[in-house]
Image 1 (cartoon, one colour):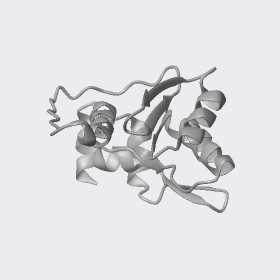
Image 2 (tube, rainbow, N blue to C red):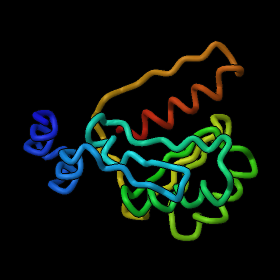
Image 3 (cartoon, rainbow, N blue to C red):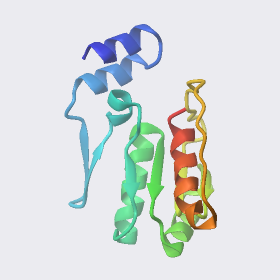
Image 4 (tube, helix red, strand yellow):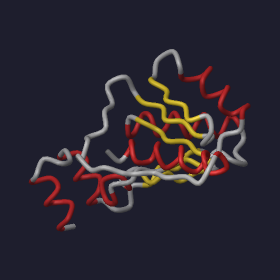
Length: 146
């Protein structure tokens, strides 16, 4: 609780974010298939990441819509090519999309959503092209945590 209050005092989070984080049980149920931890980003600095692998198309779209409505963005990992195409068709008109082809992941954001930059730096090294997928996923996460 102290960390949340300190982050609020330093202007790192909004009053609304602090309120959500202090209600540690903020979990949104989407249909009968998902429970989204909407305050994870405030509590841990890392947002909820949706694992697309194994999800039905309708469920994936519903989960993404819910995350976009509640938090302004959704990070999706382990996308198949079919799922990637589906998300592009569904969200590209009204949202900003950033695709990470090798990493099989995507970030979808509301037009006004922005990530607060921390000023930190991250170096990502690979031993070759076999590591490209993991490296690209790491780049995505580093960007999304600022």
